[in-house]
Image: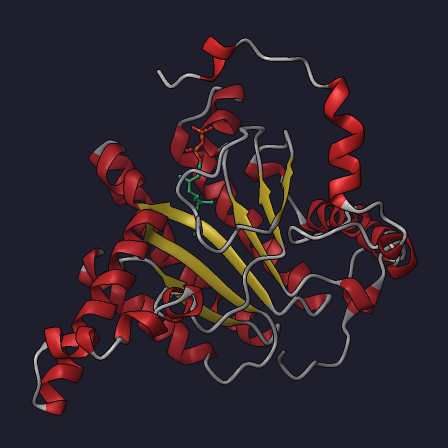
Length: 308
Ligand code: FPP
């Protein structure tokens, strides 16, 4: 957990303050990830070009980031441009999104610094146009000293490719290790290196190695999909879907999502907190339960049990 910064909740708008007052400040999520969707529909509803939806979407990004920083949210990750967007959208739309990203960064670095926000990126960013990469690097270097919210933009990002990249890195590291030790990869495998490969080995090699998994995943515009975003990391995230289109999503809506998150009970595959140790101790032993229910099970005809 990072060192907390002085609270700036007094800078929230009156609408945000009234939602914030209902929150438990000790249970603000550490990491919120957002699938920003609906820019095109927002524009379509107004008979505007899709580009204008994206432009308005960029405004929402800045509003949401600033609200996040005021409530001291440590990590905010936004799905800004997927690998699939890059491959499947018409070229003019892709190049508009690149231009928009560049101008967003150039236009907002000062505000990021005023709000103590640090910029970071995940994804195959090395495949983006060089001038965009240069601006991205400039923005992250210009905000590197900030200690508040880390805003991570997922750019040219795909979760499956992220896992592929992690596996490639693990195999490359293994080859390097064999080389350094003057032995073969087979020797290392024979010595049992695979036994030490576990879930944390994968996590450590993902783009997100340095951050906690998202507690809350928000998706705008009503689709109930993950769309290849942080597949590994959202295993236990709470998912909040709103019909609101991204260009209409602002600080109060982030706080409403956090309020909904705080009403959820997270179990991570375990039991509800209301299940006390006492209640667990008084559970009937499994073999007794099995004995008790066996007469309630329908007898199955023999053919139903044969393998097909
Ligand atoms: C989905 O809208 C959103 C995107 C393609 C990417 C998100 C991009 C932005 C919010 C714009 C700029 C971002 C930054 C960081 C400057 P869609 O086009 O898929 O909407 P639709 O499903 O309604 O067509």
